[in-house]
Amino acid sequence: MPVWIWRAITEDIRLASVSSPVRRPKDMWWYIRAVMFVLACIPFVLMVLGVVQNNLGPDPARTLAQDTGRWTLRLMLASLAITPLRELLKLVGLAPLRRTLGLFALFYACVHFVVYILFLLEMRWSEIGSDILERPYITVGFVALLILVAMGVTSPKSMVRKMGRRWKPLHQLIYVAIILALMHLIWILRTDVFDAFLYGGIAAVLLGYRLFKHLSKKFSKALAR
Image (cartoon, rainbow, N blue to C red; front, side, top):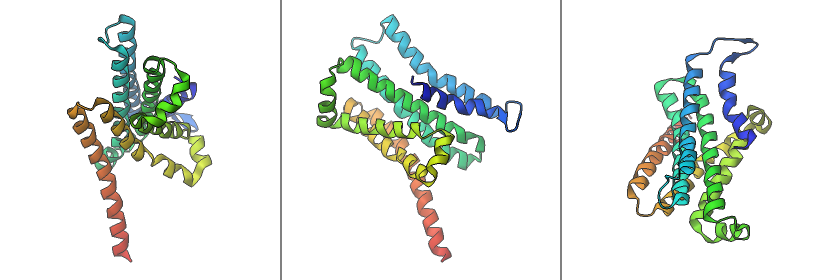
């Protein structure tokens, strides 16, 4: 894992136990973030064990590619679910989890891309560009990865301050990334209709919530005029 991703993921957990300018006792949300951190690491550990023990089935490369892709999408959806849960349940402490889950999604997306380069493409570097441009399912997946990388790089609080108003529009691209990641996964699985309905349905609910909220605000403003 790149050092900057690791630092960004652990930043919220470190800061959660510190109240400027003096240290305060760790609260409930610190422990929740710590548990979530451990849980998000488990799939990767299991994949590594599967490689070491050679029990990933007849096509280990395909299994790794599908598993890392699924976990990327699951964590993206989990990150997207934080805001509705926080607003509906009035749990302000959930907010930092969105960033951490998003960074874990980036981590699994990077592992997914590495698996593709090392095992599926077999490090034929000259073919990477043509593969991305000529295969639509790889194109949409790569664009989703670029969006996650851009969001990950700009996730530290120092970058939020530097970017100012430009930060929010950039991070709203997560909605585009979710749709592209869904297209990428469904394109690969093809016959697995269950995954298409499950992840697509969850994404539709989460994006629909935001659309409803946005339209409600516009309607309220129109009535106030």
